Length: 192
Image 1 (cartoon, rainbow, N blue to C red):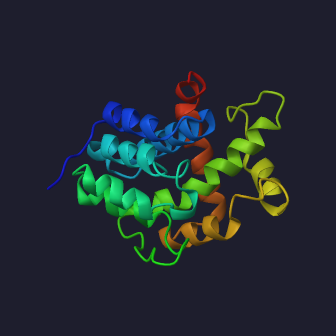
Image 2 (cartoon, rainbow, N blue to C red):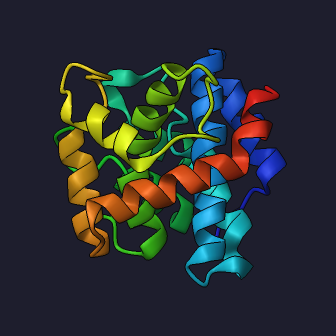
């Protein structure tokens, strides 16, 4: 079994590879969202592990966008990080590039796959609100933006839908729950 960084160590590692505030905020958001889901889905004793995976999931994206998750596997393996973390972060990019055939298996991996793009879409929708917050975000607002393919065009609706299917959830439930999850960590993200 390899090294399992705690949340502070994961954050420090993420910051070594990511200077851009957007990438750091995204990592903190996804980490917080995964922590929230762990607590809601009966994995409270693994909440920090889920959060660490969320923080690290895009470790290589800023520096190696064309080799996303391929490079991350190399980096984390060289650092001796536990294979469960490596599998989880690589699986969130399932079929993104040739050679990324590690499918999400564990519930946490499926949640990461489903919410990574969705947090971006919800975050972009929040910025359009007078409050600039998810605190007053409603499902119908996100669904309207979801249907507008030009809005947050980089957020793949197909991946979000595929993630909901992997989990066996309705899309509305995934969106509603992810809004709540983002509310749980919004203050910490905004403090960055």
